[in-house]
Length: 314
Ligand code: ASP
Image (cartoon, helix red, strand yellow):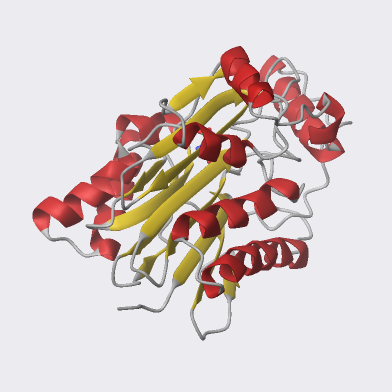
């Protein structure tokens, strides 16, 4: 039996920018990711193929904090995390602290097919070379606006408040304070669920810091019994609240709906002092896109329907 496929994507959550916003490029980036994922689903591809295709598109778009355009660590370098999970087999693959991968999500997909679940740092880079992944130079990931954000945060932290490098806040969400992880969740026409996530982490993060994104059960989870989840937000809180698995557990053990389970898990993040959002789809094709911040870059599409993208409530 086939079911209508469903796909949702996100490009991070955060506070509203104070400047003159131009939302069009963000909507276009989300639409391009939906188109890439939907192309896989429409051809009968798996949910896993779709989420990887959608996240690759977001990694290649410099507006989002993943792959090209990833944020800078306090040492002015890039350290990226990514993960994928297959809801049918509960197979998962993740990488943390990778520095040269154009598409960290693709390396996570390759790790999933190995005997490992999570590889980090130099070992992950070695694994990438062994599997034929090209090493991109640091300049590939650079964007002026991310470096300006790092300088702004470091200046604020040191109290000097030199705003000469401050970015022009033309984005709808305040890019200096926004969580910019990208992600995708999908239900394919065979009824299988999958999730993917990719991030540069948080601007000015300590070298070696790893967030929720590559941690199964925190920033990502997928299980055909319940739902597929991909998160964005203050990673330390999402780790402590085991957000993605909590949503699955509330559905599987307590019979909660996708919407109620997602809201409850995020409420716990809020109670701890964190913020952010999740995208989630269940085995019936219901979609939940809740966030506890001013807005979240997000989009979704179902078989036979026109793709939708949103940033705020409207
Ligand atoms: N959750 C990510 C992290 O903590 C950040 C983000 O969503 O932008 O690494």
